[in-house]
Each structure stands twice: as structure tokens, then as C-alpha cells.
Figure 1 (cartoon, rainbow, N blue to C red):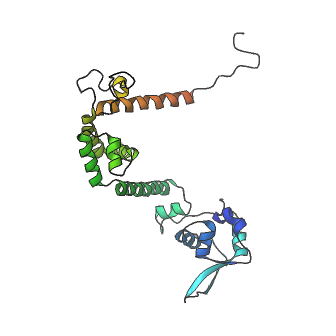
Figure 2: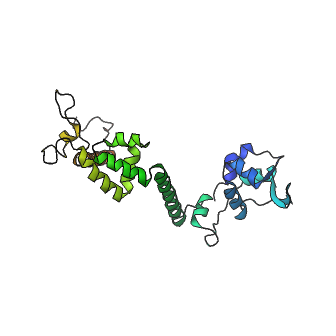
Figure 3: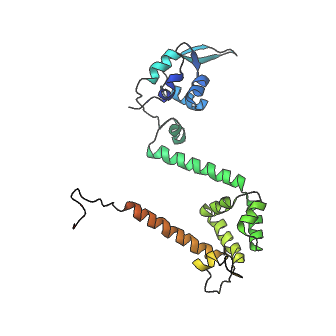
Length: 239
């Protein structure tokens, strides 16, 4: 048993009104295709066909019928033969197949949006500027993208990550042969000292920072998993 999708908007249903599929979509704050899906799955019984103002016929439901449905538990049986997993996920199925299909479709959409925001031409221009000694944040700003967008791309695009690592060797402050290259001291620099070395964002120092961040996250995870010892009612142990 599950709660009917209309239960979330039951207080907004006017029992005297008549609702079309589009009206139900607006009421439930969902797409028209999702509302059509509910009707197709039999989640909206009790409707009737009426002439459409522009010709033809349309399915309609009274507000009283929708209120009744909203207050009834929903027995869900998803048709995995006739409908795609992505469509079934949109109407409420959370089985492994539909959940994985939704995740894959969402990933494709996010990657497409990322490509639109930071296309190949902009990536090439950024890499050229960085290889010429321009800091990543400055080069990104000149191209209208954020530093997070650049490093976010590198997190899932191994080819771009490799090209970025190659380009950022040009940002090395101390030099690849220096003992501070790729260390905490190199990354942080000595900005507070007279004539001190600036913070480095070259490839080796960025790799050090990534490793340090992983260790910090692991430490936080271990600390969160440790049990919290509480003193007994009789006082502290050994007292």
C-alpha cells in the first residue's frame, strides 16, 4: 500500500470543480505527462469523457472523485513491459532497475548541461592560458566559468584531468626539483614573510592537497563511527 499522489494536495481540491488531466497536473505540481501516466496506470478511476472546447473529447474528473482517491491507499502495480524504467520512476517506481535507469538518465542530462556551460573550445582556451602561467581561477573567470566548474569537470573527465595536470605544471612556484614541491609547505607557501614564497597551485602541490583532503575525510568518517562512551549512573569508571 502507498499514499496516493493526490494526498499531498488534497486540501487544494475543490469538490465542486471539474478537473482535466492538465488541471490535475497543476494541482499536484507535476508534468502533464506524469498526470497522463497516472490515468493510464489506473490511478485515477471514476472519470468520464466530455467534449473538448476545441473539438474531440477529453477525460475529466470531479473534485469529489479526486478527494475520494486522495484519501484512499494506492495499490501500485507497475507495468515494466509496456513502459520504460525512466517513465516508471517518474510515476513512483523505486525498484533497482528503475532507480538505476533514472540515475543514468540524470547523469547524461548533467553531463550535457556541463558541456553546454564549459564546451570543448573553452576548455582548450583555459588549458592554453594555464600552460602559459595564468592561474586556473583567473583563466576560468576570463572565460566566464567558475573555478569549481573547471575542477568539477576534471573529477569526472579523465582526459581533461590529465590535460589540466599537464598544464598546471606551469604554475609550479618552487620548481619540480625543489624539496618543497608537492608538500604542505609548497602548497601553503610563505605569504606572510618578507620575500616569502607564494602559495603554489602547481600539479604536484595540488596532488598533495587532494591526498590531504582524502585523509581528512577518512578521519572525520572514522571519528563519526566511533562509539560515544558515557559514564555509568554510579560515576566514572574506577572512581
